Length: 287
Image 1 (cartoon, rainbow, N blue to C red):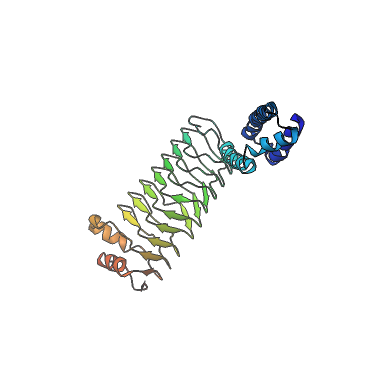
Image 2 (spheres, rainbow, N blue to C red):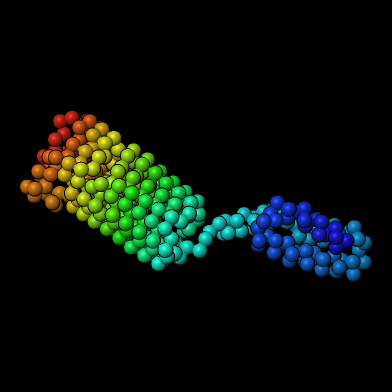
């Protein structure tokens, strides 16, 4: 009858043999079932009755095993995430789950983070040149004092992500929606933005000189004390966008006049604010 109990559990656990914790659960459960079966036999039950009562005593075990397996698989996909001070150029982190990971002072040049879940991770003082963050989740990540030159951010998830004092020359943000992102004291003059949506983004004391934002969308964006000379917003949509009024010196008025808004659409408040600064809005549509 022990063999019959073993065969029964083998059938229940067959879909989850590769999950370590489920295998351990199976061994523990087999021991408990054998004990229960012996108790029932000692009470005078025949083999078949004792077997049925033993199986009934564990309830819907298949659902329990499935839940344990699903939880275990999730945990097993998560890796040890303290890579601070590591020398890991060209590493493959594609698709990993590494929430709240630590990548401080690390050499990560050319590493692949495509599709990785890096929620809440911290990158500081690291070499992340030419890294691939395509499709990665960088929600609540801190990226400060980094070398991100020529890094790729294609359809990357950027929510409350903080870029600070980092080098982004040649970095590409393609098809990205930035939500409540902060770009502080960062030179973005050679960064590439294409088909992006900026929602609640703050550009603080950053250099945006010469950037092309043509055809892109800005909602609730703040350009706080940022250099805007020769920036183009051709065909862009601007809603509730604010510019640094406190910096309205003669020099700033001259800079605003170099910004191109041809074909842009903007709400009345943004329009009025820019008009008061002397921006050329002759080819703008008010919405």
